[in-house]
Image (cartoon, rainbow, N blue to C red; front, side):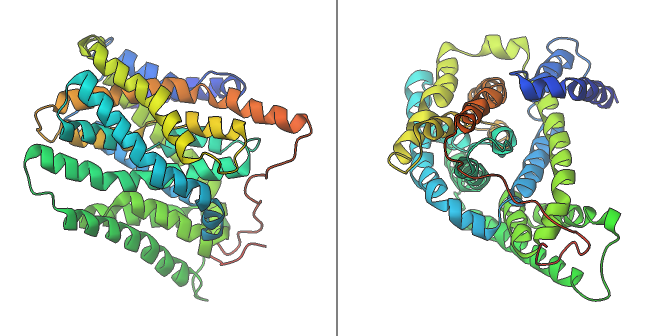
Length: 411
């Protein structure tokens, strides 16, 4: 109950400061991170959490699933095709390069064996849609840049997962189970697309339909059902969430639009709760127990590896210099890496603690740096518009009536 009370108080403070945060470098995510650290065992000791407990892993898992579903709902197949030229290069070229560069740093600076170092690289290779959404949701940012970051951050979580599981299996001496991993990924996509098509088809039957005030609950019910189905069948819930959101935006745009505002509030709540609990893990003992090499690797992953891999993969891709630099900087680490880091911490491998320390350091620094820089970076593009430069596109088109929430067209 202390955790619930703390969350309520911090949420009130955050809402009160949200107007200031939208105009400055003050970050709402940072407020929850600091609050979590203060009420955690390292300071006031009001709540007790550990990397081995279910609370942290379940909240991070739920937050990532929710945000992927909501973000997928912003992207129809048409928009994916329009943005795939850039995001595909970032995923196919930039992501493997990031994995390898982080692994090299972890091997030589921390002394991890190559398999464990590659595991760290795989965990830190995906960017996070939770914190990327801070800049993706700003209309002053060029549309193609928003598409690039949104697609990349949504897809790379699922792409990184097979590598994480294989490296974990090799490090622990178990069977790699590549076929099993592939089946989980395929099932995630099948369930995400299939269940959404079934539900939208049923809602179009003449006898079915929802009352207007309950229409946003349709996609929510779909997401909850999908989440339970994936965990019951061991299908990949993250690919399922993202593919379900995309499918919904494609075949039932009115439903996706009706859910958008409500869904964003839910994703914000789950994000804040997960950041609060994650912050409780960041005790003074945690920071004093980390080595200089671990700090260097964590900083390099954000300040050098991400920018270098994106600039190489998107070189001569038609982006302006400002867009290229913004894409290179906004590679935030978050709940995908938290979930995968917790898998490593609970796996029993020899260097489990070191792996989680590296991951947690990178995430903590990323939350501070990226969540405080979305407003300044957005203002750079806002200045471009004020200067009379060509408009690169606006946000998603406004929706019309949602009388039929799973209709296939929007007025």
